[in-house]
Image (cartoon, rainbow, N blue to C red):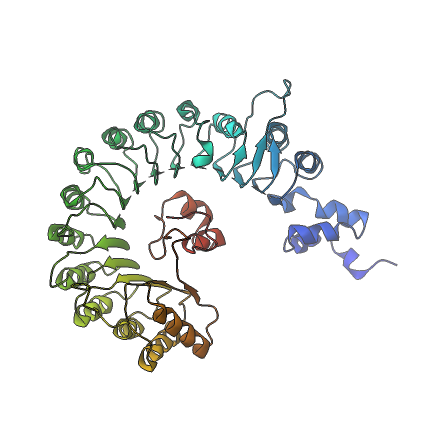
Length: 494
């Protein structure tokens, strides 16, 4: 006697099975032969995540289960041979996205495999790899429609600029922490990939920026550029034609060769900027020039701002209030020694109704000055920033009191979306007060982070550029992005 569910047509059963995870589909396949055929239907296996498999098992899986309808494959901590990649290319011709993360690539010496060809591949993430990583270059060379590519330092010693001859459609490239990337490579990239829109050279320490003018000349569509931790200089940046470019996102933080001179020039040219990170450059003893703050105030489209402040006796309250009045769309703001008065901070926060991430380094005139008390900062945030999600507090010297614990408590109650508080200070009392308030507010969902010298300082408040590879491919809601600003579980540090 057949069960009632067997009366349902196959189309309905496939719709039901589509809501199951791949692990549960494998369990369903054990029920009967009919369900086995349905559970392994290609329409249910268009996206596959594979963990910790060896080359033999990958070949078996590719031959028996994965087919022509597969469009996305995620390989995590697997051992992958060139034979595996060849089988993927042969069995899955419509593959559009390959994520290779923390894998070990092996070489199997076979002469009958031929060249790798992924005619429909659009996205390739090849980071944190070990072994014979030149397989990645073969994949890039065989993907003429590749649009988004991410590589890192695991390619050092194998990287070859000539692969970009095969990627005329490339739009997003992340080469962060890749020591093989030189200025000559940027010039070659500009010649071969004119459609480039987003480029990250973060921590590419060999970059001096000599070919950046050619990049802006050839890649007119470039909208996002990260040069953080490189050796670009004022002279190079001032020789770039920012008048004719459509740059919207710029990160030149932690560049020792960049000063107020070039940043003042850049901010005077860019009027549609949405993302600007100019933190920790070589501003000298007097801090950032006020002309830069006035130029920034002209960008009404600004959403993310990370900036050092003027190192004066009166702080930069007026300048930042003016920025907040004109840049009301700001969602992320991190300021270093900017607010000398509580009134200035309150006025700034009052003008930013969409603020979600806020970081503040306390303003102290000298080593004896304690600066603003943390309770007033917390009260201002609780009053004017109910959408707050992430908070960074740096250089606060407050001792534990019941009033300050109450301020933390009210912030956690008022800001329902708050999920992380990062505390950069040697003062343990701040962390203790936040922990006590979290227990009282019953907010176990709020993570308290106190980075140490063992963990490199992460990017806590300032998000990745919106057009960066990780944001475009994985989006803000993906856990892999959220983990990047957590120093204990982050994939990478900033």
